[in-house]
Amino acid sequence: MIHIKDLYKSFGNNHVLNGFNLRLYEGENLVVMGKSGSGKSVMIKCLVGLIQPDKGFISVMGKEIKTLDRETLDVLRSDIGFLFQGSALYDSMTVRENLEFPLRRHKRKMGGNTDPEPLVVEALQNVGLADAIDLMPEELSGGMKRRVALARTLILKPKIILYDEPTSGLDPITAKEIIELMRSIQKKYGTSSLIITHDVDCARVISERMVLLVDGINYVEGTFEELNRSTDPKVEAFFKK
Ligand SMILES: Nc1ncnc2c1ncn2[C@@H]1O[C@H](COP(=O)(O)OP(=O)(O)OP(=O)(O)O)[C@@H](O)[C@H]1O
Ligand SMILES: [Mg+2]
Image 1: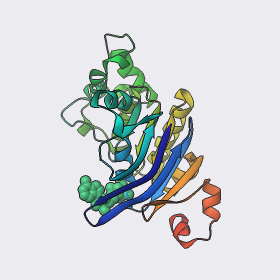
Image 2 (image 1 turned 135 degrees about the vertical axis):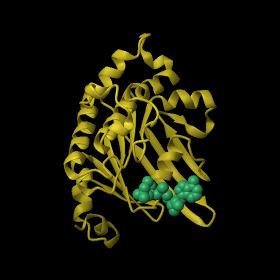
Image 3 (image 1 turned 120 degrees about the vertical axis):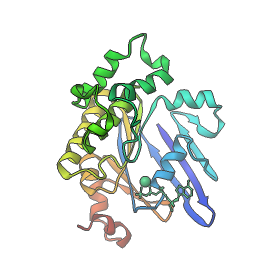
């Protein structure tokens, strides 16, 4: 679903990615862990074409990102759900309007419906928030915002979901609920997920495979158990409680 090969990205003298590699296979939950500032968000933004890499190959569902014109990239992006770090809801729009927004941009995702209402309701039901449809973001708790953001991602029925720190800033119980939601979504829709997190509990529960991003490269890969057993200090640092 995703292939990243030899990705480089610097900002001035700040060499963030130095030959990073990654593959995401169909239907899997892949977790990428890395310290704060290690380049996880930069990598994910390169993936969706929000940041231009300096060098490297990126293909998503068989299409090489840098060869695509705006229109093709836009269509491809509608198959990729991106849950931004934080929730990034539009504060001046109701929950309903927030969810209608992506549908307006990608009309072909309406599945022949002329009325977005049923799709909005379905997406909110998926995250257990059907009652919040007419609330404003400021009326929502942090966990609810995260759920609405997830619903807004789901409404386009993406084939791939990119989660950037889906549980950060949430209490452990709410974080667990979000993780459960992510799992149920994957089961229901068979989506492939790339999950960026430094939450070890999240990684343990959700990952089928993990990649550690250290010094700008995919430093190690393996299952949670494999990495958890590692005696490499750079790997151990992530798992120590
Ligand atoms: N648009 C930009 N311009 C300049 N520097 C940037 C830009 N975006 C990111 N950086 C730098 O790239 C590095 C990696 O940032 P990034 O946001 O990818 O970190 P991260 O791994 O996602 O961290 P966190 O876990 O805190 O979210 C940081 O040093 C950051 O300052
Ligand atoms: Mg980040």
